[in-house]
Length: 207
Image 1: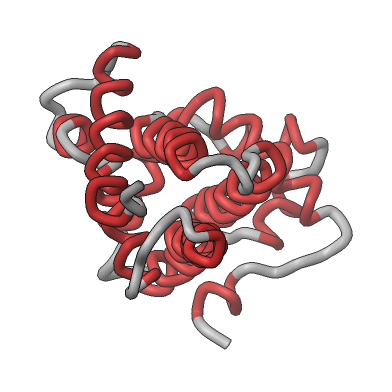
Image 2: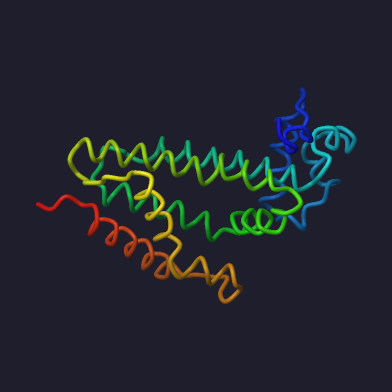
């Protein structure tokens, strides 16, 4: 059992605390969210909240992990995996880019980086339930597409990683370094279409 797991205690109101925290973090961000507000929205006492999560960062990372799992499951349910690769990849790229550029996504990224020395387990646990989960879902889809003969890929894991990186082109570094914080639909469409076209040029089955 790692240090993060040891610090997070589960109990009868654990899910209640998480749901309240998710609502507050989504509305106010990490810095703006107070423990008092989270406890009030979750309808629990501060003592109960602290009994589950002694550190606000631990609570935020737990919410982030659950949110990533939720979005991945939602994507699987809403995306027609039997559709042509261009269609599936465009929808996947849209969802990934929107999360990368969201205030919530950026806060998760920055906290993981900022706390990597003090709480290295946070980054590892988030990776396993966030980026690694997304990677696994992409590998599953790519494997199915290869079996159907619509894509031709030897290394599924590498291809999944390449696609995720293509979705970060231009806009992600600009928001990370504070160059830009707002992007138009045309900005997003340019990156999404470029990612899909590049990926298909490499792995698409030629007619």
